[in-house]
Image 1 (cartoon, helix red, strand yellow):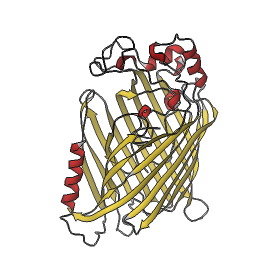
Image 2 (image 1 turned 45 degrees about the vertical axis):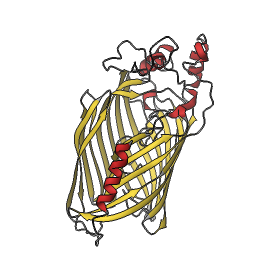
Image 3 (image 1 turned 135 degrees about the vertical axis):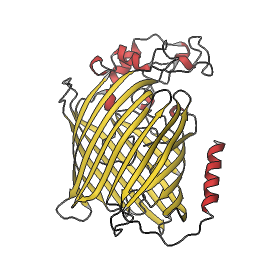
Image 4 (image 1 turned 30 degrees about the horizontal axis):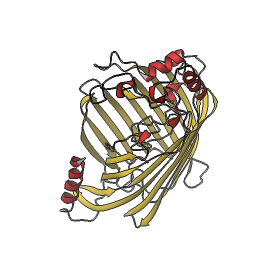
Length: 442
């Protein structure tokens, strides 16, 4: 982690050389191109490009924009990546906010850790001595990974609700095509995976094992009194959404009805320099059946992050294993102290540097196929060391993490983010995890 500390120190020292001036009012078009660079030991080097494109019109709304487009194309040298286009257009159509997202993800190493949080077993035959295998330092385990490709389309609109200040009705359509298989990276060919064990025992049904098509019709209400969209310092954003997913294409009986509720509040503690921000969220199925490959999707009308999946990972609980808290219903919370350290101007743009220490928490509130997990466990002979394979017997409880983030903000809208988070329970992950990307998580 020394290199991250050096990056942060260098950034803070460099921006101190710029004197603070009167804020530049942006007009017309503004472009924020950035390279995408990363590395993963199994997937290889990540490379690509992304660009935020803003239009501020005549500048009277600045720092609010008339509309925004984002494009990204990035991949890993061993075959995983993402292609994305999205647009946020709050003022193109009078009194109507429009949002569109078209994304294709392909991942040859996507986490699958089982269902229902702490109820899922942490057993991994390839990183233990249970069956006389080498240690995890000598064998890379693919037991908790799958291959997953997904195409996503989300279109949403927002309009005033009978003239009530800050209150809006929303409607949207979403479509997901998800394809799933066992991990297929070189070196894992002979390993049995948790995913395959779930399929063979019936925890994951045969007709949903390899994914499918999901169509969602969304209707909701939004209350929004924030002063800014991407970097708010005061106000409330509340979203209540009813989501119907009729089984229109696959006809396998996986239609369902669910709700999603989000509450975000930004409390100024000292002018616009220090803000206490928190988010509370919940999602539950009301009726019908949900296929296993969709239970981790957070069904929001509008989103700031590329990934809309939880719980765990960079979007909901930073430091907790991604997809480590899967259930048909869940609740979560995030608290951040956002400290804007310094303002400066560079290349005719307004910049800010901010720190955000955070605390995240979440829990499964509606279990997914708990009985099937218990039944699969019951037919097994006890493993050496009393290890479980499917159902740990532990009671699900709150998962927590904490950490620190650094933000570089351009024109109050383009936010480059570096965060480091650590799970506070070893069962949720033992390492301090870095996350490099864009935007606050809420």
